[in-house]
Amino acid sequence: MAGKAAATPTTYSPSPTTQLKKRPIFKDVDWIRSDGRGFHQCRPAFLRTGAVNAASGSAYAEFGNTKVIVSVFGPRESKKAMMYSDIGRLNCNVSFTTFATPIRGEGSDNKEFSSMLHKALEGAIILESFPKTTVDVFALVLESGGSDLPVVISCASLALADAGISMYDLVVSVSVSCLGKNLVIDPITEEESYEDGSLMITCMPSRNEVTQLTVTGEWSTPKIHEAMQLCLDACSKLGKIIRSCLKEAASTLQE
Image 1 (cartoon, helix red, strand yellow):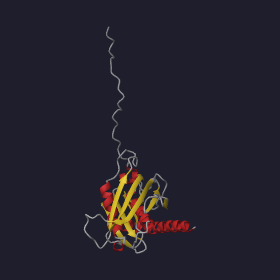
Image 2 (cartoon, rainbow, N blue to C red; image 1 turned 180 degrees about the vertical axis):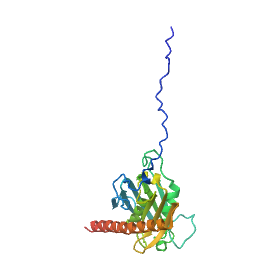
Image 3 (cartoon, one colour; image 1 turned 60 degrees about the horizontal axis):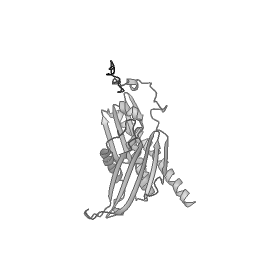
Image 4 (cartoon, rainbow, N blue to C red; image 1 turned 30 degrees about the horizontal axis):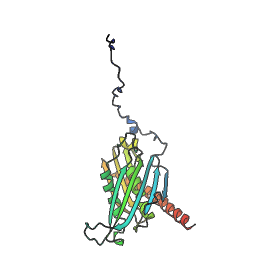
């Protein structure tokens, strides 16, 4: 005897979610940042060297929820297939862990970040000091919390210094987002998703030289000048923090 068929089959498929509209909260003049910071206040920075024992030099950086680890290997002899060069070579690679973002595997463009990291660092490294050799820089974003590339660049600079690579100066980077009429420094992921434009400066603070400037969106001349000054001032302060980290690491080794 055949069993009675169910009237309506049950399913465990999730119901389709409606697309949430972006809340224009950042358009208000008196809105408050979700982490309680002022518009011109950077996130607390935690830095340390020696994060990877097998590397020539390494560093770990934590800026709010953004967590990055960078390993430096070399200088090592360049491959025979490469043409002879009087200056050293720099290889940079940036990758994201599969759990770096809320949506699994939704990291930023690794190739673009790797290229921008290379451009930011190559002007600060004295490549002539290690001819016929190569230095490899591997950056891994453990958690993406906003302003990922500036944190990667600053952490890579610390790792290069830890590896004893000759440099003209440390390299530090800070970004600013334009949200309505407000300029927000060191933006988090939520703020970046609403931004009307962004500006990132990478510089050598002691030499007062800019190694990279990236601008997206539409900016007025006064706004872009204000944003650049905000970034340069923050870079100067971040450079001091990185130097103090290196001094602390050196004093620990001497003890």
